[in-house]
Length: 202
Image (cartoon, rainbow, N blue to C red; front, side):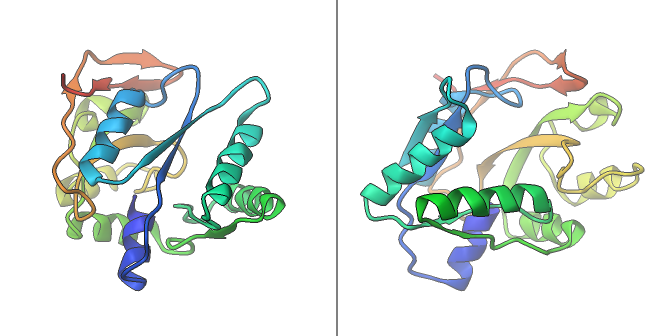
């Protein structure tokens, strides 16, 4: 999301062909396909949903890239910040398919990045938090300056959640034509995370 925003700031007039959602059997981080669809509709950007089948994630991802190539798209934007292993994987897979990957956020410091994200006007809801990081304090909050200051007081955490400290759902900001709507469910625990499930409002 923020990678797209940064790229459009640096390259105004760039045509955004589509957003890509990799669909797994189980919903990730407390939300499923319905809120992803709602998010894309709120942004006014077409959404491509690629199902991860028995051949695995990489095969499905390559299939999505081949689909985009057939539609004349040869460049993809990725939000990697500093996790080298994942960036190398993206670069390898894209190279094998013939797509150019761009990383607008690469190498930035996460404290500066999260502050810039908030000051740019994006609004994002915390929907999952590691169980050992005071989820009762942070879960269900919209990330703002107060959240950043409080979360930053915990030891050994990345402010952007790059190591799975938390996960969010972006529902409004400069890229949106209108806020994405959602409804919150009951908090539950799963795989050492507290999860706040959300669903698209009917």
